[in-house]
Image (cartoon, rainbow, N blue to C red; front, side, top):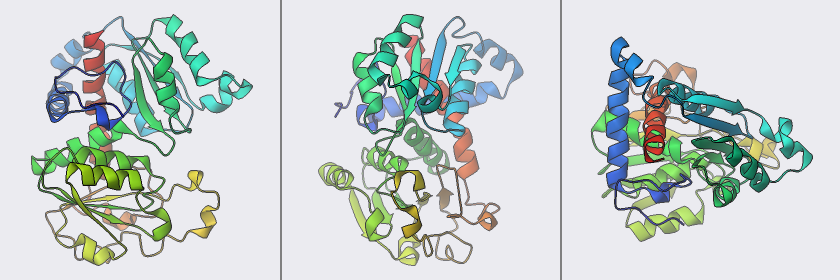
Length: 319
């Protein structure tokens, strides 16, 4: 586990939420806010597009992605950085021939990239890549492990709505055993005082023990329940996730009934609360909720652009 950093510099690689301190998070969130303002103005947007001209990032995705990959690529281009990209690298790169992630990184290090952004189906694969890479590596999701930049944009969204990241009741529901976004968000929220997390799931898909141990060490209160109505009462944030079918041996054995959010099921949710989802959505949040003013998942996805711009700006400025 990476130690928390107490200054505003990032580690060379971004692998886990464990690396971030409150000071670093504030700096990233403040910069993301500034980038959002700059992108809304034609003149400042043009100036921004020259900020890191001549620098280049590589997006190396072994798993499918829409929001993460495209927002990283748009973020880089908004900062004037070139982008070299590959998707479905597990099928269409030399990995299909048996090349290891370490050998792939040793080759990519020869190409002069300023950052390499990796999504991989194997938990721990991005850390393996970082261990041999002389180029900064960013974890864009690794198996059942973590998705640190998703947690950053999730927290940024919460901060925009409540102007704080402490003293919150946050309900996290769905497939918590296999979903990396829920784990990363729980880790991030444990950095702030007086948060209470409520994990809603069936027994087979409960949050993993390592996350519960971390919450205990940090003094973050939490509970586990299958009572959705009780969980939503007095909640500030509802963070819902899909069944991770691609990570289950027999996904047909799992029935999501009772853990879908509908207008009826959220009747106990306060009007001041917000509903979030890392997307993609399948059927765990009914389309009828999209028009509810508490639904923030599309804005949440949009915030990923500003957060990833702030992160790439930080990395590019340190190298």
